[in-house]
Each structure stands twice: as C-alpha cells, then as structure tokens.
Length: 545
Image 1: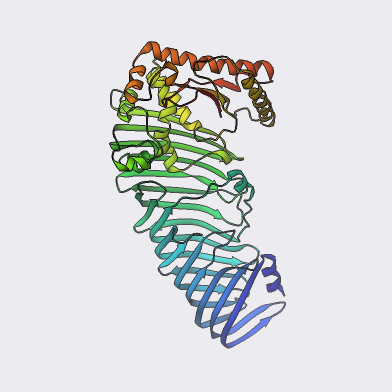
Image 2 (image 1 turned 90 degrees about the horizontal axis):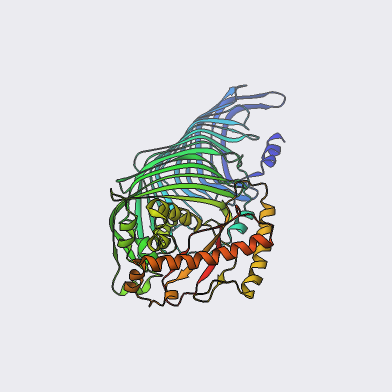
C-alpha cells in the first residue's frame, strides 16, 4: 500500500510485461523489514510513465545473485539493461536511445528507496522534437552516486559526458507570437535533481543555418562545460553553468551565468566573452542582409544579459578589427533582400579609429516578448542591416563626431531588436508642418502612450519612447543613384539641410504630444534623423522603444 501511494503521489506508473524471479530468500515485510538469502531477476518490456505519458522504456534487464542482508535490505552487485529509450514530453522535450546500461552496487533498504554507486551508459543518441534538426551522440555517460526515494525523486551527485558530437540545423519557421508562447509556458516539474554535470574527451557541436541564400556552417569545439545544481522538480530555482570553447579552433568563447529556463518567467544572468570571431566566416549573414561580404576582419564581443519578470536588459560591446568588404556581383544579387545605398567599405573607413578598429556599444532593454534575439541578429545581421538607418546620420552629418556617431549607432542597433507597435506618420516631400491627418493619428498615439506609461509607472528604469524622423535624399531633387547620393553626403550645406528638415518634423510631433497629453520629455525623446536613399521612399516620422 505504501509503495502504491508513493507512486501515485509522484504521478508515476510502472508497467511490466515480463518478469522472471528466481528467489532463494526469506522476506518479512510488516512493522519491520527483513530480507535474507539471494536470487536472480530478469525482465522485458518495462515502462515508466509520468501522468500516463511514457518517460522511459526498457526492452530487457537482468541481475544475477542479488542477496538480502537481513534488516539492511537488498544488495545487488550490478544490473544490466538493453535498448533503453527516453520519450520526449511537455516537461522535457528530449528523446534518447541507449543500447546498453550497467548499474553498479545497488542497495535498497526497503524495496522502495534505493541507492546506486554508478550508472554507465554505452554510446547513446539523444534528439529534440525534430530529430533531424537537433541531435547528439555521446560515446559514454557516467552517473555517480544516485539515490531514489518516492517523495524526493531521483538525485544524482555527478554526471560525466564523454565525447559529444552535436548537430543543430536552423530552418525557416513560421513566426510565432512570442507573448502567446510565453503565456503557454506551463512546464510540469520532474522529480530529478543533478548536483553537477561535466564534459570529458573531445566535444563538438556542428551548427548549420539553412535560412540564408548562402548556407552558413560552423563548428563549436567545447573545452569545458559545467552545470551545477540542476533541479527539475524546482523549475523556478536557477542553476549555474559555464562554457568554454572556440569556433573552428581559433575564436575562443567563454560563457557563464545562472538561469531558470523552465520557469513560468524565464530568468537568466549571463556574461559572454568571445574573441577573434571571423567576419569572413559570418559573411553568409552580411550577404543576405546588405549584398556585401567581409573579405577579412574579426570581432571581439563582451556581453552581459539579465532576463527577469518578462524583461530583458542586455549590454553588448563589439570591437571590429581591420574589416574589409566587397559587394556581391552576378546573378546571386537578385536573390538578396536588400543592399547598402553606399559602399560598405566607405562606411567602415568613416567608423574606424587610427588603429583600424571600430568599437560599438549595443544596449538592448525592453519587453522580452518583443525582443528578436539570436546570435546572427546581434553579431552579424543586425550590424549590417542597421547601417542604413543607424550609420546614415554619421555619413550625412558631421555634428555628431566619430564618438557620438558610434554611440548613436550602437543605441539604434539595440533598439532595432525591439519591435514597435505605433503607426508611422508620412510627410509630403519638403513639408515640415503637421496636417490635420497627422494630428488625428497623433491623438490615437498619445492615448496609447499614456496608457502604456500608466501601466509601467512602477518601472523607473523603463526606456523612453523615441521619435525618429527619416528624410529622403530625393527631397533635394536627387536621383536614386549611388554616385549622386555620395555627392550629397559630401556637401555640408545639403547635409545640414536634410538634418534640419528631419529635426523640424520630430520637434513638431514631440511638441504636439507633450502639450496635449500627460507625457514628459523624459518619456518622449528625439533621435537624430536617418536617411532614405531610395528615390521612391516617403519621408516619415516613426516611434521606437
């Protein structure tokens, strides 16, 4: 009765189709427990279910010459199992196939709880929901000092993973509502705690991105990987981790922090340092973004990340060294989504210091549900995609100076990773005044801003809403030609004229909203205007957060 009750309390179910038991023992199980003698046991088609969902299935297992030690319970020298499969579930989306497993020095004081000195897994394979997109092979897995009790679940002191080969393939996916995905997070606890996880041997992860016009592939070699205090029964409790390795041997990466990835509100505190990342290696992303690629150069990254209560606060410093770029030519260019209006090489030269380096700080702060975060967005794709809107003010206006331009660029890059939900105001070319149509639209925007500010009144550090004007090169009568655009950029009088045009529109928008609504200047700020190089582009004022 006690055994059945404890299983139900954990919502676990055991199923066993075949069990052979050849005992030579005497069992007393009442007020006191006593087991004497010995025997053999074997079985087939064993299943462990959690809430009627299979967790583990075992094709066959056997143990010979186990013995009873009186009131000390049951002792077993070893137990061997074959063809073990782990089944993915909502709680743990991970499947696995283990051909052989050996348990050593098993002790059960009452046939309910048990301890195991060591568990050794033969060459095993694991996979995610889509097996062909995410899988891993591990030559050997060793678990030291396991203990099971019905109420506490399974506790493991140490896990050693020996010689990992992981494969991860990124494929095009339909966009999901991140906020809705967050609301759906309801992971069920699993009674499992692991005190430490470490790696041994040679370990490698192969990453392939098939979402690009040119496929990207990289090998990440793992030198050190550790996890401490992983408790799947307490998903709100963070665990700590460290990762040291390199991309293709020559680009060291170190990551450390704590996280609770299965909590209802994800929590992460992390620091990342990456050195000498190859920009040539990442050119698959830059080609896709702007039609140019880096022939040489490297990037060093220092990043801190803080995720809690549905918000993200990320501070990134990117240092680019000796960048050189070329524009893609030929039939391939027709497949690209866009290209820079000015040569990337020219932009790089304007941003470099005397040592040939470019240092950019990229802060990202806002709602986690609307943040677009992945490695390529931050370190390659965003760098190049942001050039048109973020570097353009530097090309057009000398007032900012190199330091100011890079600060502005970094801030704009970070904000480009946070979605905005406000409509855009369109202006006729050359006009500065607000029309009645503009005012009607601003009335709706002002009401939304007031509501947004009232909901977040307790958050003193919330980022301000930014008014961002984009002026069109064609407002000065230019053709949509690269050479003409460059002539305008080199003319200080024309640059200042464009700057003033965009700034005047932004000031008019800010003044209208501040006078009519309960909004302060601290919550509604103006950024330097950006440039639209396309002759057909409509001048706009937009809002960013």
